[in-house]
Length: 372
Image 1: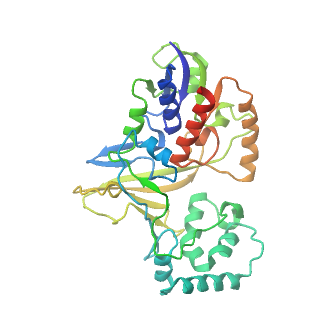
Image 2: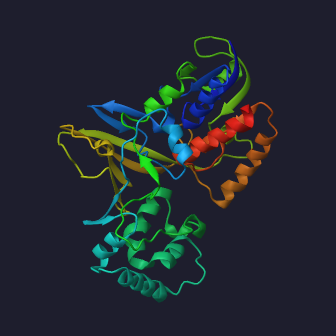
Image 3: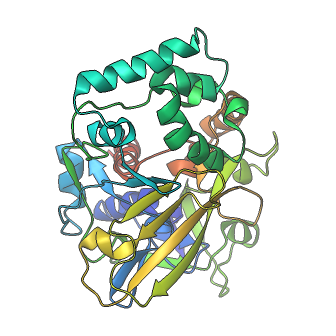
């Protein structure tokens, strides 16, 4: 079988590229090592609830063209992300706003909140933050840092805030309005019926093979069923260091583990997302999936999320974009720049954190460069 493009990875980047290439008359084969399409945005219906299998995905963008593009494939509801933070037995609204501050300090006006934060920052007298802890303290003061930043960040990164570089937190969004809209984006919502349908529609009419390992195909020239495959170009959305056999050394990633269970109750926590900001609570947050689509099912499904260090054999989620890893990535990027028939895309292929809207925009930019 001969193809114009082999697309490695059936996530959003790969699916958008495949869809656009197919529209332009290119013959495309999409493979994925998982047993399903849609990558990390994969949703699966269980007990009539669309479960975000790989963690919460809330679509948000300020770009009208991006919003219109994704709305070709699904109808979106009007879900607004308004997470709750739980510190011990205290509950706070996120992002940090007047609801947060009034609960924390029993104050009522924006000026009172600003004065409180300013006085805490002044007491600390941090002029040049040496690490993430000092950076966060110098931006938000001790109370916000201790209750809402410290423990959560340490769980996310698997190390103390004093060991993390200051540049990870360039700013902390402090809002002096009573506004719980986390993203504050012009367009946001959840596709009614889940995300998987979006990728299904993108890949209609395109040959897709799941449970296929690219490196086996590259080595043998055959799919797992013995079909011989040839292709002119590759779009690779896997780990760029793995593509080059980690010749400069492995890049670092963070991973996430999920514990998902169905509960015989209608409403467990009253919100789709509750962050647990204490260091002693092992999980970072609990997702209650039905609330993404305003569900009224008689039972509910929750997922506890545990952040962990990545190791081979575990799914990588986030690149660790510190100075060391970024310098290492540039070595791989220099190899990639010399490739005539391989394109690298997505979080893992470009070693860059992307929100869903930015993944789609980057894929469309790739299409313009490659196919127009």
